[in-house]
Length: 267
Image (cartoon, rainbow, N blue to C red; front, side):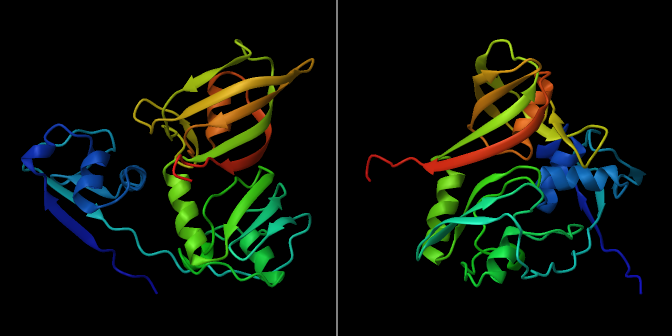
């Protein structure tokens, strides 16, 4: 049974004169900039009665009409063993798992494969109840195609402390990445904003209006046609390593992370 979409219409405040449509939607309707851009790309935004693109500019007093997205159906956590996932540390507050390639951090729409949360549930671990139901205990994520260590909160205190640590970037996130070719220079910093790909909404790319993203890299070992790099992230954008290395003309074919928390001077 189909449902009638909810349409909301608001006048553009004078203070938003000249803003892009996606920025205006984000400010007026409370969406993220990314979600606002997705709605515009889907033809669900009108400006004074005409379909508007995400980069169109708004005028004060114009009527901005948005077809509101329907709530996604709840995602269910399925407790099932995950082949190759190992527990490397376990105490009353956290559990650290070694996540293999091909495993998602948590369930999401469209993903039917194994997850870290499902693997922990199958092994009898109880995790923090904070966060959305399908990602309880998750304080950071790794891509499905990335192997490495993930920290999952078991206690509510651990969840709060770890989320704050990742938010304030006091976690030192380092990765080993195998990339094509040999970067020049062999050590350096890539400082380039990352946002939705202008032609493919499901991809990410270096874009002028993306979020600030900084990646530091150092050569570990050079091979004939590839390089093994040690990578440190200042930011944690989706697919940041792959996007930055591809933009630097050295696509990454594999990544594997470790992470540690830096102690503040107060302890």
